Amino acid sequence: MHRFDGRESVWRRPVDAFARTVQANAERFGKLHLAIDIETQQIVGVCATSNAVDDAAKVEDLLSQVPDGSEVEEVSADGAYDKRKTYNVFNKHGTKAIIPPRKNANIW
Image (cartoon, rainbow, N blue to C red):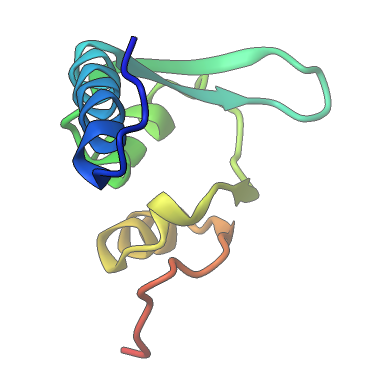
């Protein structure tokens, strides 16, 4: 336990060590991408990735898992999917996308 002795660095060291630990642990975890039918609440597509994989890169995989004869009319996703390649995939499948813009979004 550190005592305050008037030096800022005494307080900063434990926080920095904690931040590094949190970052190291976050890199170990993966992400689970799901495609869910909102009418039936059934999972129709699943893709597991590491934390380093771009979310938008898995859109095609998820859409390809939708059962034959089913049509994906609309997709809701978070801002991580707000990328040109994602919209290109949705346009190819004739799917409407509801995705909020990313924090650093630009008009194309």
